[in-house]
Image (cartoon, rainbow, N blue to C red; front, top):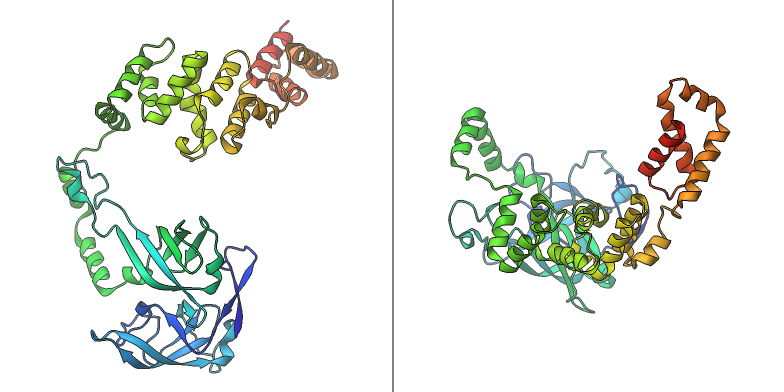
Length: 416
């Protein structure tokens, strides 16, 4: 039969559902069965009742088959038909355990590539040892023969899905009709593993150790961490071209040593700055925008993926250096990064609106002063805090103008 199951858990609150087929043969996770379960185990075991996610409750009855190693390969369980839709069993007992499952007849086979941390240590280069000794041989695993819901057969390459209790996966480009390939991009924590008796015992033993002593011991053995500046210096030491760019940038007028350090963090940033200044100059402006404004516009997106070449970036720097107000320039940069627009197109479509000319700005200021004679008199009488009121009124009439420029012009007019 078909069961209607939501796409998202109830606490997420998003709409949408998908049909789930269920027959008298299903697959469950091997870890969801125990012959002799511990006290706090809430999954399937002899005589135990659990709920199949979005479906019926079942009661484990007997082991039907085992492999040569003794691992269970087939179970027989009893369905409680009155429990569909989250309803309790007839005897009203509570069923705390919920396990996930797929229908055996309709589910699809999948190859899952499980990626973990490449290194067993957080900073493998520290401590003086060869960083290769910290490679984790279990950081990549390929699982074949996994089973997934039939609806995933048509999932688009690049789409992301959560496999319950397993992790988040992205559909790999190797997927095609009849062959599903998924890459795990985020793992999920198994709460039961954290509550195993050996894990609890280890935590209890750790609690007996004085926290101060433990921290002191760690402090004595922990290698001294490096600052970001030290990492950048090491990168340049390994890359002669990056080091040459650093020396070139330090020598530019208006570029500080700290800025040159940040601009040579990697080749992508250095190439953008070098190419931009070669086309339009203004190294001081270009440095400030690459270091301060570009990361905000990227919003976590790698610069290498933004296709922001010097040819596209240089017109923005030239316009900014020759009078384009900051708000308009920032809005244009966001459009350039987000939608791949040229500076001209991004500036025309900018949320900052049209840039106010000096004449239009002067007219807006005069209009505000003329419309508020009482407040102008109060300002003249010493209530100088009203300058903010006048600036706010002018900003509404000239949304494209630089707020700092507006404040300066308003102040001049008020004090005239």
